[in-house]
Length: 120
Image (tube, rainbow, N blue to C red; front, side, top):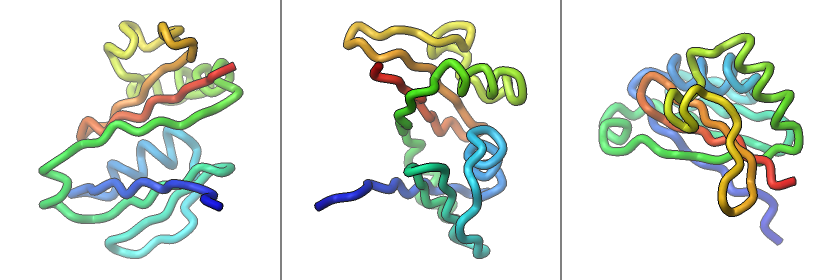
């Protein structure tokens, strides 16, 4: 049985990833070493890896599913509106997609995008 899929996100500066995932999304640091950090909240985890060469090649888009999207958006909009993606949707609000999900997105200084999605 698979229990989770955990993305590995490469950064030239781990502080940028920590800003997005810990300060922005309120994840907790579960492991911290100079070149590898594990962050998590509830059942979601991510590996932040210091690797400037890999970071220069690709900036991923990730998704986190939630059943509290309104509260999550309100919290981030109040504390860290600078992380709300400026065009996803325009104005940084919540949008209902044609496939039924409601979502908003965050964007860090390196253009890593995290879509927060609610299927209810």
